[in-house]
Length: 292
Image (cartoon, rainbow, N blue to C red; front, side):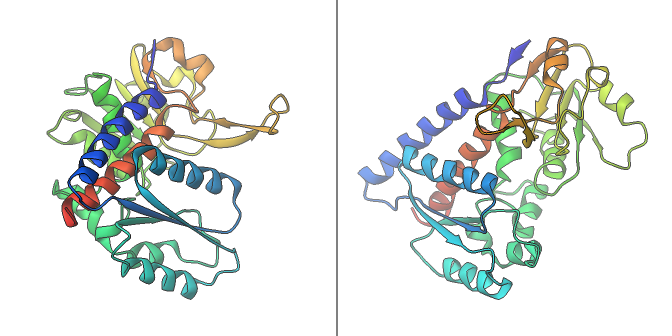
């Protein structure tokens, strides 16, 4: 079993981005500027956004953090989105989810200028991804592809099972893995909550990518010997032995699954750092495509 170390791989990717930023600065070009909007006081969301701001500093980007109270109305948030759309100094921005229940996330996503949608969630960018056209690929799926590529994980001709069909991870992941690319060229099965024989399908996978949001959902009897397992889950679960009172738990029962795998991602330290590095990659792309 080999750990797919997302932390180490993301550091490599961020170093490459930082080198490109230094070259941009040397020729007097536009330094990438990422803005992040967070609504409310969800602890997990604040942690994620703060990590993104720290990553901006590490690679040499400018960054702006906009914090709004959970009483912010949908109209007020949409006005802030429009302001960022029209700010030429901002190359890309994200609106951290989840949003308070009184705000329609789809409406907010659609209001973001597709050219600044570095999360890759806008319908235009998802459509371009589906067609294989140049675009921002959603940060988590793109991060997984980079992780597989940089660790020389063979995907061509393999059976890849993706667990979960969200527009953020599962669905784009299934498209990327089936493409005529490297990584890619896999035969893909997408399973979800209504799949009747999920256990058997998962157990047939050469590559198993799990994004259900259910702690330790995938057990050892659902994993094939020698499989590659990518765990996207990051759920906070109570843990009295931890000073915080909780720990991050993946969707895979890591302790009992790891010895069956050829490769497996840890949680934390696997997909999470790659998602942040991919967001940096998309922000750099925004400048390269539209500014420099």
